[in-house]
Length: 112
Image 1 (cartoon, one colour):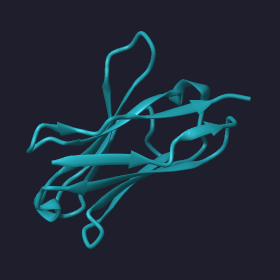
Image 2 (image 1 turned 45 degrees about the horizontal axis):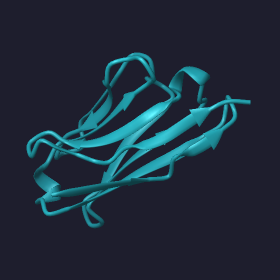
Image 3 (image 1 turned 90 degrees about the horizontal axis):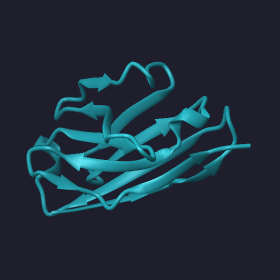
């Protein structure tokens, strides 16, 4: 199983970014997929997940600002992040919980 994140970087407060996670080695369409993040000195936390039929769940801190989606034809899960705040700065990880697999992580920095 391989999960590869892309799309991170530096953005100003109030800006937007879209993260992508391309999956291989799994039957993507039946898997729940998730995004987690870990800020310096803090524990890894759930940001959002989406199940096989598109039902989503979000951390309270990102509700209304982040949107998780999936494209089963491309074996890819996305995280659209808007109205970004400095508190969103973290390494973001893609996760396929049924397989126990994690991506390598990608840095998102929100700073002016």
